[in-house]
Length: 132
Image (cartoon, rainbow, N blue to C red; front, side, top):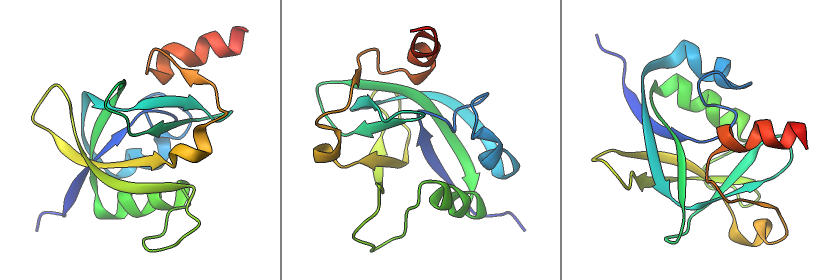
């Protein structure tokens, strides 16, 4: 019997080689580079994506089991229907290829005073931040 899977776009600490990738790794079936419409903000030790048609965020599409998405929900402190989630899990399409799936997005009002990651890439930004 094949285990049910879904796609999730990741753009920060869940990326391959990043600190929280080990949470997704046991449930992972496939990884593919991707890009979605949005803007990336520096929350501190992790980034936050805000949906925005003006920007692009670079990341990866993970094909992951349903148990994996549950573990990611725990990491992101996301509960369906809860009013005080830090992130919401929404459906999104890649802006350069025919892929769609879930992504964890930050509320735009929470990002108002956060530094913008202009490159849209946590991988490019994080080393510069560490050396600053």
